[in-house]
Image (cartoon, rainbow over all chains, first blue to last red; front, top):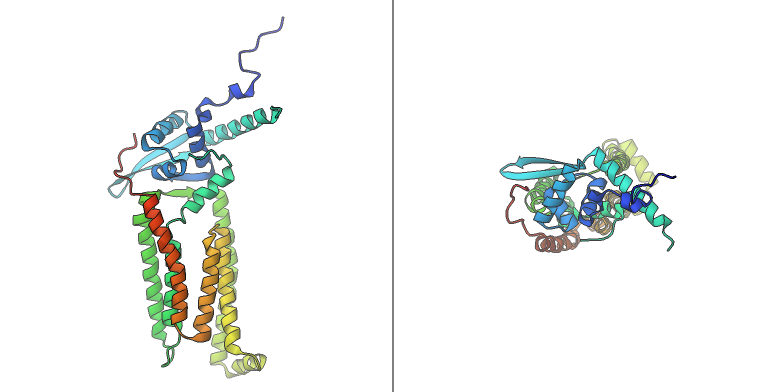
Length: 108
Length: 216
């Protein structure tokens, strides 16, 4: 008798990183992957997300350990610097490879 | 929100977004106008004081540019630090520009030697005999500037930089060849005006965020 594999283990798309698979977070991660660091306003402008939406997605990415958020003050203004961590970069790379594999195998 | 996930494109778009404020255009245009004002030889001759005025003008223009970036661009667009590839490109650009500057220094030394040492001066005169000296100098100076500025435009992916390069070359040619400041000043305006239009569009597109709150 063969051992039954868990659901989705043979389907790479079901094994993808759910944190990065969400379109807005993928957009944020892609931007942070190609740059070194950016502040909150820059990420907001580049992704087109609203203040609250971006804030929520950043919190999720930070929770997963994919990004690092540093809060400081520039003069009297609060400034938030966002940077992708090494595990975040590795996860994004792996996500991209998995998605590419999935679509490469798809007979179109 | 864009659905394009081409990483190179995302990086390029992010990088180019830092140029959409038009401040570089205004800065280069001011440089051209200052050159026109202080390097065009007036009828009563060229004075060293002109160089002092030019240096002071350049400093003022740079200060204006930096102030604009600090108080107009960054609060609206945000701040970004680019990755290793971009830093490598900047290093390559600096090396190439360094070579250009080296050749310009050689030309400057040759000019000074020709002015100070009559033997060197005579040698240059013999080499340039029968040629239009002023035209030659004007062409060489404008070509050097055009190529240097094009190198900056290429490495910085600053598309408008090619237009600025051509305009600056035309301005330098007119400064040296015609020695009348009005034409290069007009060329400077042709660089500044698109910059001002871009600045206005930038201000409209990126209003100042209403309040900078704790992002939690």
